[in-house]
Image (cartoon, helix red, strand yellow):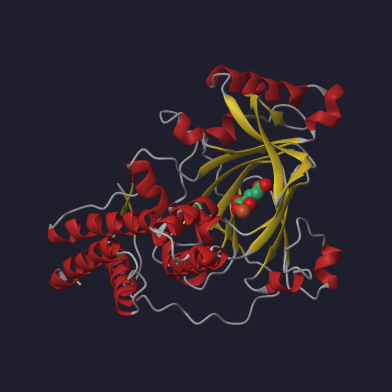
Length: 398
Ligand SMILES: O=C(O)CCC(=O)C(=O)O
Ligand SMILES: [Fe+2]
């Protein structure tokens, strides 16, 4: 099992220096896990990693590189995959803050790639957020790069056989993803296996300059609108074989400037879990404000959690279930002498990494109890307190 390890278990993030003029590009062979952890994940900095997907099955087989220009190998994909319904975004139609979604049979979508006569339709449908990995668990068309293998969200969801955050995107030239920050405030990584995407990436807070008089954010931005609003932003052209690490809370808009195919995960871990928890509490505060006039109804707090799940995608119980599950796995391994903590795609955590994760959870739960964040939810508070006690009684190993 391949180990991912850090050089010490300190939870103190390196002080972020001023933003660089450009997003750094680094060859995978020149970037260790520990460097990525300290220089990018902890300080929440974007980076492009080159040379990352060359040995993936999808990189080698989904694309026919024997023709000029290379193109999607539709016969191969049809032979590998059944004609399942796939989710597509209609880039010609706006639905609130994103594109309208519909489902198409996979083979219809693939067929339209081959047909030039349907150009207008072809360049409109964007196959995105496709859970191909969980739909075909036996088909290992890629392996998560070790840099991104500490992933509490998918570690938990995959082991529970629940809906995960691992996706495939297949976008014809001109399709695009509207201006957004990622779900929960998670990190995302995106690896192109084909084509080119253009990203506009904004450091956290810069999006505030784009709010209109109703405090709404724009659906789409251009370099011109960003410059006019005095926004600090980065433009990145991402080529095949390159990964983009999108840190927590960085707004972005992405265009497939050529036909482009990518694999992406959303995830969080010990480096950004405190931000996720803070976002979740802010989202609950928004819900409570929205339905403040119902405050006297029975089960008001439970009702708020139902609304929180609907708007944010996760409620307090979901969040704690992930954190407590992750913590238990690590505590069990610390209690044994050779216990391994398995991560997604066959990775395992090194000892310092296990300690880092546990210390992070200890700090998070300690603050949660101290500050009364769960006082409206006694059962959750009890579960959090009991986990904290378990951590404290394992202090020998910490
Ligand atoms: O590639 C795209 O169209 C969007 C990707 C994205 O938003 C992400 O990876 O966070
Ligand atoms: Fe995104």
